[in-house]
Image (cartoon, rainbow, N blue to C red; front, side, top):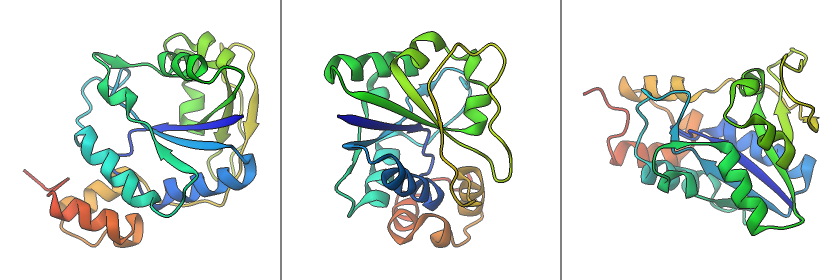
Length: 194
């Protein structure tokens, strides 16, 4: 059994996330592909995010129609900061013998050596890294030996930051998030200027 775990803030999830997930489905052929919205990111304690239930609902709207995608909201129910090492330990306990693949962007990979219990992270999961367009993936100094798979996919220049900015200005975000997520954001007044 092969589990692909895709973590992130997903604040909001956008078509770039979806393109990456669909590409990973084809390239990795996992038995399950799990979207893991982050709880309270310990490295960004001051980051204000949309409430977890909204981020889950937006992911569900984005991935509707792909039965191999699931959403796991366990990190949203943790008290205190959210650590990937804890999440991977739980998945290992629940799925003994499964191959865990943890999908991250190159920016996260470059900072991985600073993560909490990084030795546990790299011991429990193969790292699947998506490089930035045109840049080679270079293993950061100080990172323990690990299994690495680079997943190059076509550049999708969409970011959650840009979506939030446009939504705050009342601009059309449909081309970036799709109609269902855009409608959800509008109906719940997410990202509007206070």
